[in-house]
Amino acid sequence: VNDRRLVALALLVVTSGGACAARGSYTPRIAVVDARGRTFVRDGRTFSTGLAGSAEELVAGNAIAVDHARRYRRQAITGLTLAGVGVAAVATGAALGLGAAGEDRRGAGAIVAVTSIVPNLVSLFFTMAARQNLENAVNIYNDGLDGPIAPDAFDEPRGR
Amino acid sequence: LGGFGATAVALLVTTGCGAVYHPRRGPRIVRAEGGYVRDGQRYDVGMLGGGAVDLVAPNVRAAEFAGRKRSLAFKGLALYAVSLATMIAAIPASQAAPGRAREPVFWGLLGSGVVGVGFSIYVGERGDAALADAINVYNDDVEAAGAKP
Image (cartoon, rainbow over the protein chains, first blue to last red):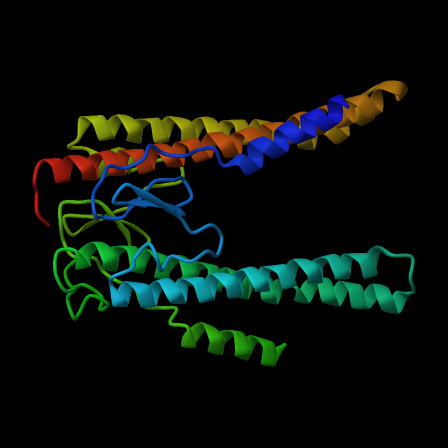
């Protein structure tokens, strides 16, 4: 029973993500208020995107920002799905490779496990792209509060 | 595999992966371009909080939070290293232990290491939260001072 309690405590510590920052004040600007950059405050309201949740409500009212929020969600869901495929491939490969089956199955298991790198890597790209689009959506929304965004805002800035 | 990779790349391109928005130059701290931007200047904050104090330096209250980020990041990393070493030591320590003690030594050290790693992640996240606090305190004070970007 003590071991179970210890495991439960460790899981609680790992999964709680209890490192929430102090909440921001009442401003129309979006502020990030958690360690993982997934919880935001705007106008005193808290918005959480989770792993692949919607950020459209967060940036509602700014069409360009909403477009980026949609891209973020599509990419986040794709990344998460590919990561799931990758993990499933690793598990399948391990089960085939470690099972008491013949040489052929072990070979196939090793191939499946090694090729699982592909969906895992691609999922990483999607996840990174998703984060970029979420960051874009928030910055476009905040800048939009001060007026239309610059037409060259997506070009590399000069002299920086 | 080739087909899968091509489909993934096509999906990535069509969903608009690469566009980076460069925020308007202003006194507020904005997370952008893989780091932070303030007054048109880019700041990087390292894993151990290096650069965090510089980012919010003119604001003493925010700098305190940034200092906490550094301190917690160091503590988290140190705890992580010790916990990892404990987990690795579980195997040789259990082999060196007398017969009946082997299993308790192995599971005891491994369990302590796992809990330590979990706690180090928590401490690291407290550090990230302190950085978020530092930035929000800084930006709120900019707002309060009535600065316009």
